[in-house]
Image 1 (spheres, rainbow, N blue to C red):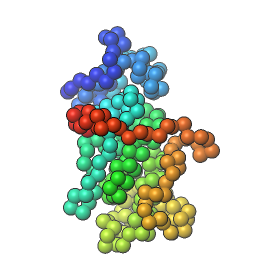
Image 2: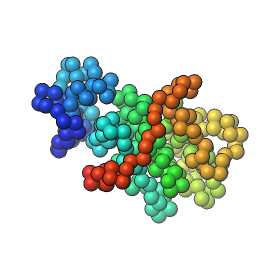
Image 3: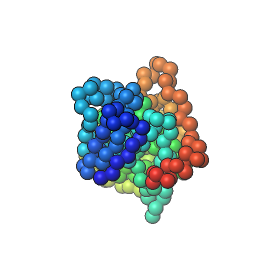
Image 4: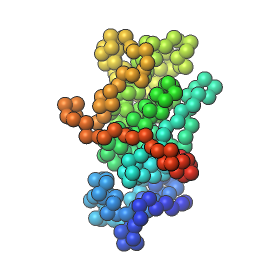
Length: 239
């Protein structure tokens, strides 16, 4: 068990988060927490602590830090033995799930954007394990699922079978595990008429993968790239 104080809090103002199966302790200012997360508004009036046994402590720290200073540590993918692997020790899918649990669509969108940026930087795609985890951790009809199903549709149409990294049988098995995946792929086929752009990362304007209404103006300011000094701070913290 460890304790991390994200935002300075006096003893009377401290709200305790017990995160993960081992109940990692995160202490946060109650006033700051309620101001930034509506989820805790009513909860903090009844208790001084909350348990999140299924959440990842790293992701909870990142979510709180983003609320504090509007920066996220980069998502870093690398190619290992022909397969793309997440290099850093935090998982954008877990962050997305946590943000969905707290009912925070902006944080969901930021987690997805961080994932897309990490892949686009190296022109990498996702493997089936990523698709499986993403569908397991995201709500039906969410922007995350819209993006993941597009990746599958793109690879099925545009990638030669010997270069795809997975077999049609494996895709079929994944669709049996996540029936929504097969249904979600079909609109992409119809929309593109099975003609996809050469670069998968050029297709999505940010707002098409945001949670805000399509007919409204985007409420989010562009997520700035963290400064070099901020990146060094993240590295020092082990992200």
